[in-house]
Length: 189
Length: 329
Image (cartoon, rainbow over all chains, first blue to last red; front, side):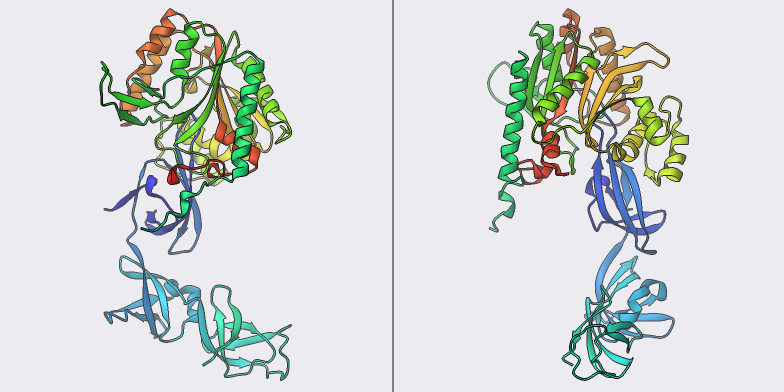
């Protein structure tokens, strides 16, 4: 079984904790001058997203998690699974609702996503930073209002609801920052 | 070949000027008290056996009737300075580079600058007062001391963690760390109470110490290192630590002078090193010979100069005050 020494700890390293794959967020070396050396790590559980802290005796070995990030194309959802494809090998992978999580509301067919695989199964899905999505429903646009002040809610084709300026109409394509869930601008589509 | 962007110093030139000023003030402080500045070897035939300290080694090649070609880089200048004390040097100090393998982080650099001094006729309590006087003089007008507190190790643990270090058991500590302080340790030896107390000190107490100078004294006998023990129930080590703004800055002892006791501690250290699979270390027989001939009653303290510069600069990372930290050295 692959393992890492705490000396190899750094942000992004994937390790197993209590049977779950986790990623190290940050780690700190702590040692009293005449005492035991510790490595204190802040760790994200990749299944649940929860952040926990662990303190290791410096130099201990920790089991490595077979976790890797790959770029896959989102194909479709059958209601139970979200299907992705490797655009080079055409190999397909199905992600559960749990793995897709909040990303679901930004997923548009054919967009490329970063999929985290654990033992070759999708564990988490990160949508593109920016997505172009059509407005499915919103109050009628107010002509001439380009102030952007105030705004109104708009429901997008994927079901996500974002605040948009008053002048936006149904059918328009919008550019959205998925990291903040905020409207960036009108798309050129 | 790509140029290395980190050829530049990590510390600002202003910080390096502050470092130089602090070093000048330290030397003035000791000169004003007629304490002799000394230099001792960085490369020695023997080293500190303490299992918590890992020495770098190197090998001498070349002429000279050198029997010990394996050399240890000093983890502190303590042993040769004690040989000077035993030879009648009187009170002495040294500013030097020391080297500790396996220690790298925001507050550790594997090579760092240590100020170490010894006062004949002092005990650890007298020396704590002098540490305070030295810091007051050196930091005046730069980062004046807010306050000075004195704690015994036991009082400190009771006050800040609700833990009695002299009666607690490792198993009980583990349960309380998880439930009260949300600290989950992995792989700590279950029978090594000192390891658990170190965890409480670094994870629970240090973050609560706050601004100012805090002295802690009367350590458990098992953490005596090179301090003499004081009889009592329980017996405690005549050892102190100084924390400045929550950062461990200095460690001092009323120095152990008993050669038989010193040899027994070295042997105990070496046994612990074997069990912990650490590199074996050659015991310093010249130090033991010096103790045999007689070490004057004295107290000594080692103070991390880089950390002092860090605190005086108001930053929290050693790499901000070292020209070229380990990863760009």
